[in-house]
Image 1: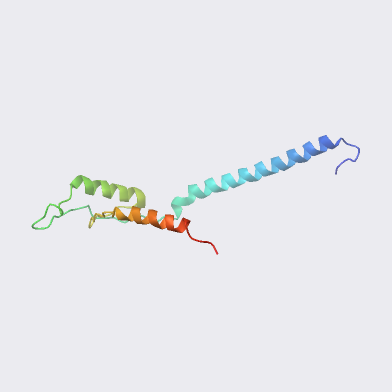
Image 2: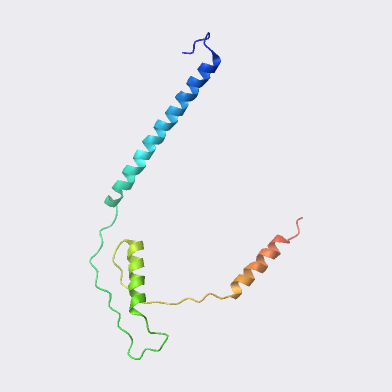
Length: 119
């Protein structure tokens, strides 16, 4: 209970310190709960399956575009393993070439959108 004869400055400081301490205690509880969830995350993950080793068998008559560097396949497999957390098998590699005209088209669309008349 607040004493009516007390200095209002002291009462304000007491209320502020009480509120800040409650906030810090709640934040500490939340931090511990999040670290417990992070620590228990491995319980809910799937167990990795036993996989077959990566074997790349080139076609009978490979063209220069069909040849894959074994180091590239190894790097792709390592990146997929690091991302997925389970062994993977590289079956096919496809190269995507981005059209350079897409950037010009995107620029034109943004300019046209900026110049639209408002009703």
